Image (cartoon, rainbow, N blue to C red; front, side):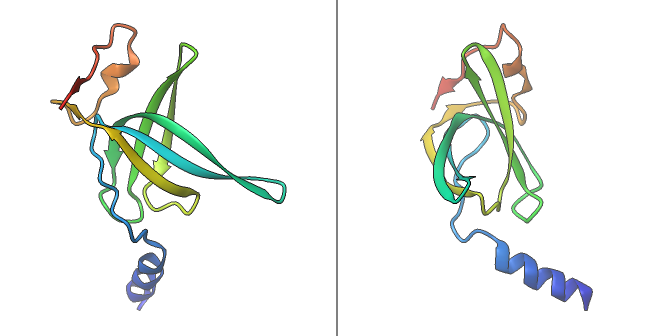
Length: 113
C-alpha cells in the first residue's frame, strides 16, 4: 500500500520532458528565482561533471563553471520544480564517468565531439 502511494506521488512530480545531456556536456540551467512577489529566470552555465541516482526522483547532476577565476559547482535535482529548462550548448568527448579532475588548476580542456 505504501509503495503504491509513494509511486503515485513520485509519478505526479516527475518532469515530462527528457533531459538529453551527458557528462562533459556544456549546459544552460534556467532557474526560477523568487524575489518577494516577482519571479525571474537566472541562468547557470557550465559543464556537467557528475550525474547520480538514475532517472528517478533521487537523480541529481552537478554543473561546474568558473566565475571570475573561482570554480563554482552546483548540484541540481533532476526533477526539481525550480528548474525551468535545461539547454544543451555543446558536447565533449570524455573517457571518465566523473570529471572531478576539472577542479585542479592544471585541468585539461575538454575535446569537442
